[in-house]
Image 1: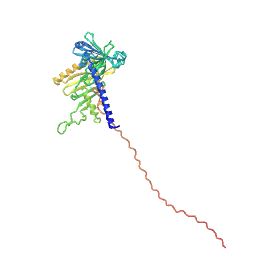
Image 2 (image 1 turned 45 degrees about the horizontal axis):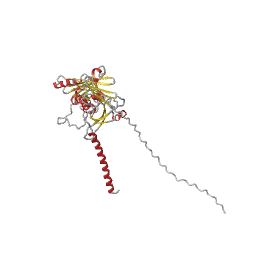
Image 3 (image 1 turned 180 degrees about the vertical axis):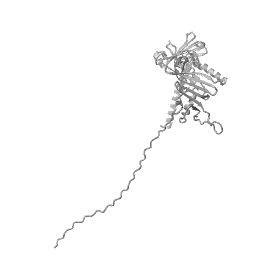
Image 4 (image 1 turned 180 degrees about the horizontal axis):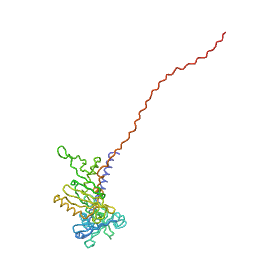
Length: 397
């Protein structure tokens, strides 16, 4: 191909590509420009403070949260607090939801934009309903698939009012969560591992494992050496035989982080698991006098943790106030924890100490002497005897 023809072809490609991009931009702009000021639920913005109950249905999952005396709670979790930001996000979104353009009114096409019946077995839609304190419905909406807007635009979502055949593309984003624990305040505590000095674990059979924080080794200058970034052994296990090493620092040290970033998977009133079988109990004592006690109870197919805070007699008043605040927050509740946190609260001696390694002596094969080869005397070969030729008698004459 000649250079001139090549550049002409390249120029034509650029023009076509640019035209396609311009068309796509114009379509997006036209869509955004068609956003109506009409709200999907007229008048809701003036009644947001009347919303007393939020119900969410998605397939087999049903979530109900209610406005309580001290904030929003979940009734079927004994009134445990839920995240206010999640509640606020959904109420405000519903109140400010604005139509962008009408969509399908055909039921057999609902599933494409996920606005089908939310109670179906394989549904992807959700239905959110707001009720007032008397249980009367203020607003209800079937919420479908999200549609992300071009740069500079606002994200949108497909919705349909229950009982209406027409679906809509609307401006707004809900934060609908299922199952129920997704709405709960997940954080239990954030007590740092550096605070603890003694950890004691007790099991139903009477066995114990006790961890004590070691004093850091000091250098020639009387100060702890600089950490090279590798995990250091900062704990010792009581009763560890001299011939058994601690497990790696990453395993032992992590035990002390049981109360740091401690979040729930689920929760229920403590009285509901009071008859559970005790799996383990633990006591974490801090250098400042704070003491955290835990009990792991097995009930059904899950383990539930119950916590109680206390202090030593000589603890400062600030620490005693901290313990009181922890008990106010955690008292009366049983928490289902991630499995690794359950393990941190139920350590056994053998979880912290390496098993005794018995080195098997390999039997060396018996040495065998190499055979001594005896030199055989070389026999000289005698020259072969030549047979004498028979003598012939000569005849006279």
